Length: 183
Figure 1 (cartoon, rainbow, N blue to C red):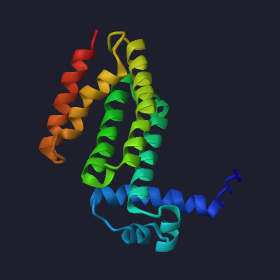
Figure 2: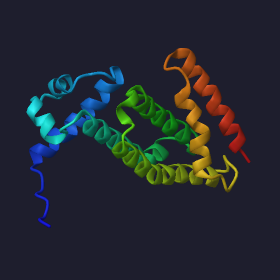
Figure 3: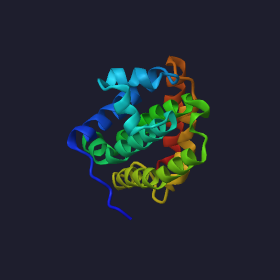
Figure 4: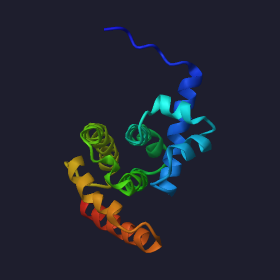
């Protein structure tokens, strides 16, 4: 099997820019065209299609990109906030990412999408485990809370409406859940 040719620095930069812009554009309008994403990213349509030959390929890459950034953010969030506030902040960010994904409707229901989404569970579960461990060490949550249970419980956050009333409801729901985690 031939070795993969490494991408040039400018190609990697373009890919990164497309992913960042696609995240923002899709958050604003889930039906945004690939051409509008390319334009906002400052690249030609050919460049976008070279990296992401289909809409699904771009959507899956944005999901992977978002989850990768979120998982990598745990140390920074813990450094910037007390553990329980870090847990809150992290789940609010995850909620925003999942809302974007849900806003894309049927676009992420293929076998390839299910594979990518399933692959995100282990790193997300590990990240939640790190957050819970920090909260436990600070005496803010009881020991032995299962990260998967927390993810399932917190999934109510991204089911609230994406408006001020929904945000207030999500805040209340998060606090109810956190009260159940306390020692």
